[in-house]
Amino acid sequence: MADKNNLNRNLNRQINKFLSEKIINDNPSIQKFIDAINQSYENYEKDAELFEQSIRLNDIEFYEINKKIQDQLEKKKNVQSELIQAIKLLSDNNSDLKLGDEDSLIELLQILHNEIEYRRISEEQLSLAKLNAEKANEAKSDFLSIMSHEIRTPLNAIIGLIYIMEKERTVESFNENFDVLKTSTQNLFLLLNNILDFNKIEAGKIDLETIPFNFKDLVLEIARSFQAKAIENQNKIEVIINDDFAANIVSDPLRISQIITNLTLNAIKFTKNGLIQIKIDQINRTENNSVFKVNIIDNGIGIDLEKFNSIFQKFSQVDSKTSRQFGGSGLGLVITKNLLNLFNSEIELESELGKGSKFSFVLNLPIFNKNSDIKNNINGDDYKEQNLEGLRLLLVEDNLINVKIAEKILKRWDVIVDVALNGLMALEKHKTNKYDIILMDLSMPVMDGYEATINIRNIDSSIPIIALTASTSYLSLEKAMQIGINEYVTKPFNPRELNLKLSKHYHF
Image 1 (tube, rainbow, N blue to C red):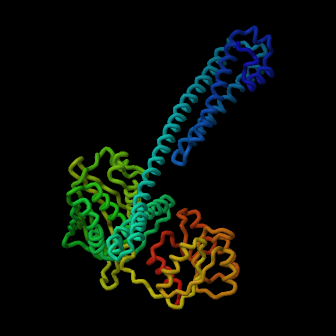
Image 2 (cartoon, rainbow, N blue to C red):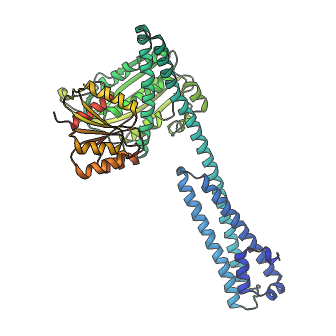
Image 3 (cartoon, helix red, strand yellow):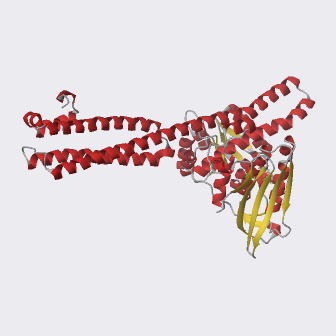
């Protein structure tokens, strides 16, 4: 038998309590049994250490599997208790501990067998959890690298062109570089919006609008907006729509536009010297509903169908070479798939490597019959900015550059702007002045926007407060709404969106 000093302290305590040294020394079988139990204790402690290491690698994606592992470890604790109880029973029932009792031996052997089996399963699952955690960390590292590239590319163009325009200071330089500068800022804005939308979907915060609009006009507008992008790759865009297509429908034009835009942009990106088709097929039509299929077809590089599921996983592209060669954040298709789920639809793919791809989905939407009320609202491009003459607004913002930009935009709408550089100043100005709306940053020194809003709401429950914030965390935005924020506009903000929300709360 192992030296008692080397035995596990818990086991040694139990042996000292229930077994004398004479009984142990006179029974070689008990000695072997104690050695086996001691080994089990040591293995258990190693397993516990391995479990602790796995927990440090754990991430939310693997919560469920680690929960199962914890259940297995709980079973192992129960096995330990059964082993100790078995020894107690033997000691109580027979002071001489005659281990020749066949039933007792079989029972103890079964307990030990179960212990070994539990340990094997736990080790397998711990290894799997560790492997999955390592893969997840690797995927996230790749994603951060891609995002860094995608953000820095348009920023490089913006910084470089501003430098050139500043040095040249000519009208020709301004005219030549303005369109490139605008495209770079739009690309950066689109990327940030994708991240924001991904967070919304993950948090389950996307609600579909019910707006009447013309689906055909929406598709044609998307195709027109991508003509310049298609020409960069020597591509052509073609729209094909059934003559009997019921175009006037009621749904969410912004989200449908986002789905078609993501798929069309994907087709353009992976096609050179080719043709991209947006094809609408009427499947069924009743008096009140239209069922139709949207197809985005290209003759580009194609996709291996075995990798179909992987391209709809977050932070994923077909392989790392794809992101390096063609760019992209890896979020577009996962956003598309999740948005389609909100429409009770699924994405379909037909593809052949080297010959192209066809992404398709079916929509079943209500028909709208009053053409005069139909409105398209694609990215706010048709929204006419309202003059807000007479609006008295308190701008609460600590960044002086952001203050200058916001003031210039607001004054174009004839807004009377007063500025507070932190929440405490805003509170004091609100007490002594009359404002129609407060535009509130959330993250500021001295007093942040949350605390300032709470204090203002204690004395004024009616004044509209619109958060103008760079935060994309939906926990913080939900908190803002709960404490009395009426609306929020995220930075970088679209002036049309800000104008729309100010108009909503300003009574002329």
